[in-house]
Length: 479
Image (cartoon, rainbow, N blue to C red; front, top):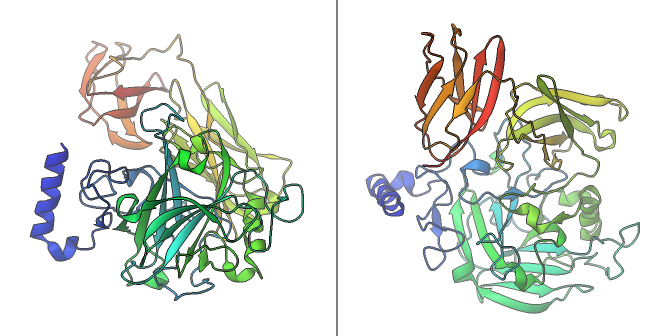
């Protein structure tokens, strides 16, 4: 499968080189070897489709399912402290996705490779979207980690090791391009002049690819993704370590501490008189998150403090509720749902009530037997996007259900039994809340139908309408 995918891509490149020269998702500055943790199938793409990203360049279209970092103000245009607007040090965000703010710029992902956490092969991946490619010269970007849930010079979470220029970070991961290119892990606890712990060659731990969506003010510049990774144990951390992550670009590739950052992520740099105040403002809004939650089966960033969603099954629906975060100037709330706990789709939205005492309610009638994952997304007036922890509403199969799906798991052929007297049996098949198939079923009194799902391996939702009611069940397809 890998070979045929590569040959198809190569043929497309040869047939239409100008078009595919900047194909969104194409890796144009690759790591060595070709098959590596950032491009695990070695096809030269960071996207699932060989035709590149379409409509969006994150989420389910990405080969590696990165989690977006929390942000406070979205990612403002032209807010750099140094460097050129729309240049290679300006952070730009995803745009044009209904229901999302324009803040998604920095991403992270945890992978324990063999399914056994903390056995030495765990990795942390990072992805940064910038306005234009790195061509020549020196520049860089940093990931800053707070590992003790303490930051700032005062307040309940003050860090006793805070110094001017570093309000509480313990680790800085620097990607330095140009002369002496490498990825460096520094111990910066209590200092702005870190001590190098170790470094990786940039040739094996870094790649650059074309992104799809860009800050419209930077067009026609070509936005890019910078991907890199580190071994988790090299950070002195484990999957249960709780962290905050901050990020910034720099013109030099040196530390971004002590006023050297060019563009800080998730906040308007020009609204704060110092970087200490800037990162403290971000810290106050977000909860620390265990690294393991950033993996394939994790819940993602547990970010906005006070953003809590609850849910329970009642009669014929899932009742979801939360309280308005009035102090955070929320413009609207989106409720997202997932069948697998990782890929979420929007199922509804609500406007704030203006009161933190009365709950906001949303009902989901399209539930499935078994696991139903939900999370809340809050969009604030200043462009911030925040996710609640995901919750799982588990619904036990109804003993009186007149519908039976089998076999489940399925090899692609699904059978369904239903009341023989049904005159208009209706079956819908969904993939991540998107209707993909509505096969016709016999109404001849047999009460049984067979469907060739004709889909890839994965989790799907089957919903059957009979006797005035919908019955739902998850179907696992494992060719």
